[in-house]
Image: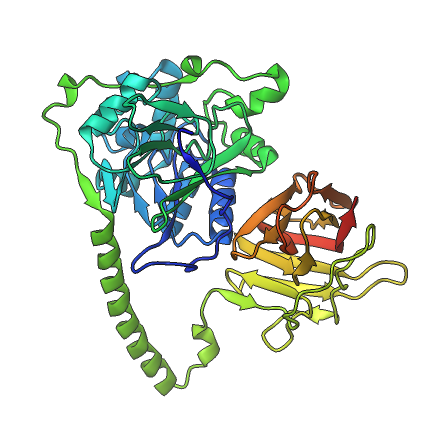
Length: 509
């Protein structure tokens, strides 16, 4: 086998089995100013225990919301390398190397951004180095040339110019990996979770968050466990209708994205027809300095900054308390409310539901947590969950409200499950008047090793304000492949109100 397969570990909890200094990294690329896709990926990465996020470049270009994407990226992505679209905004690359449609969009993007954005891009390195791995946008053999890695000879060039076991790249928008073993011949593999093997090296293309070119309409990224040397590919659905609305609202002069054309054409265009960039020659970049950054050094700098900030914050707290200000104004932003009952529920009989209805009615707070349900809020000052009492003929329901589009997650108490069992997630959902964003209902299995595996994804998509949309989706046959527990999970990132009723988990045949 070209590489060692690993069991899907995308949900492994942060900190589990960690060696000293090890972290789980979410590595993404090619957001291209697609805000719904970026929000979906960041929410997914956080839910799967990612401790740091790395961007491999091209945050802007083609998409309609470059300023909004930069604002989110600056706040929530930890490390960056420079992409070719970013380099144009920083005036480090001539727009003439792009095709005419791309040049038109580059000019429009530049008008949406201020000098601070250009300065931000100008300060980014071409290369980010970590223990055993290297990150850059295009071919690592000459990072400033932004060459593609599409063929075996491109991969060999990259390996000959570097020493790391893992090379993480983007640029082509197609996820997958090249593997080099003892034979000395590269092997290209489609996206698959894998673990590092002794004597082998890997070039991992993490795909594209905001402009997929692999024939799908999902955002692609990778999770990397740098302690175990395991890589997990993730493909996350995002709100396509919100993307269409943003294109219409901004009137950006961009061609209709390939993923929005799929429904009309039925099949993707060949990759070489949609590549927008002509890589520079080695001679063109021979004398250009290639800035590199060291991940360990950057992490140590952040830790020093955080320690200094903690001291300053402590002094500020003392001053505020001495002034008689209320402590609740300084509470942490993240709020986790675990279920009041911790033990797993027994598995239901076939066709029967097993999740208790929420209750009692009222707002969910630290003093009034939910029984049998856990809740995670990113900003408790601007997010809330309320249990509404049943109408005379209707079920009890959750009202999830967020003033800002930040991640929010609601999950059930775990349910005992055994090998071969199949489950179905059930719910009915409706949006409030001001709902914007995305959400999905999922079925997660936790095995004996503590790793979560997503068995079912049910994206809610466009919801109605008047009618309830039913979500009923079963895990595929033949059922669970190991004993463990399963959980009903709603997760999303949205603004406004989302209403959920009849949330349940059922056995299916």
